[in-house]
Amino acid sequence: MKSRQESIELMNSYIESESLRNHCEMVALAMEAYAKENDKNEVELEEWWTAGLLHDLDWEKFPEEHPNKAVGEILPELGYSEAVIGAIKAHAPERTGKEPESEIERYLFACDELSGFMHAVSLMRPTGFEGMKVKSVTKKLKTLNFAANVPREDIDKGALLINKTVNEHIQFLIGVFGS
Ligand SMILES: [Fe+2]
Ligand SMILES: [Fe+2]
Image: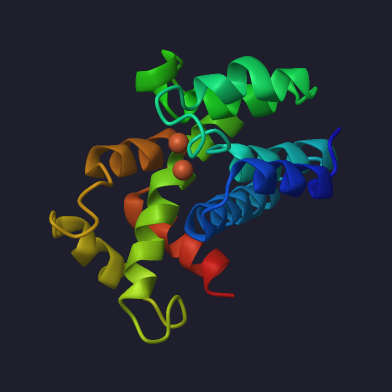
């Protein structure tokens, strides 16, 4: 199993953008929190965190191929596990043809776009995530020209995939990012 340090170094070697690194770290945090909530064992917990951290690994250097470069070459060559690679594959079904099925796959799909969206919401607030309410996020979700690049149907699909309402999913992530 790869150490967190190795994965962080890998991410830093492929991603220069501070904001993309930050996005990857947020998704890793979300995945770790959900792994704990779902009583995952130690190995699985690391896989959930790692899938979050590395899901956009090739986005900056290979935007056309993303995430196929990562799941087809970079990660297998480095010996990352099937679970991690499968999850990264399934976070972009329209690019890989793989829909999220296993638990880690469904959670990564669910955490990706919503984390990005909530980050955008946090930037609009003087206190960031602190004191953020579910309602302030859902209101922005209905404002279609806010973070217009985030597909609202993927947020709905993600919540459905983890058997939560969008509100419950947002509430959970406020707890994760706000602390
Ligand atoms: Fe992605
Ligand atoms: Fe992402």
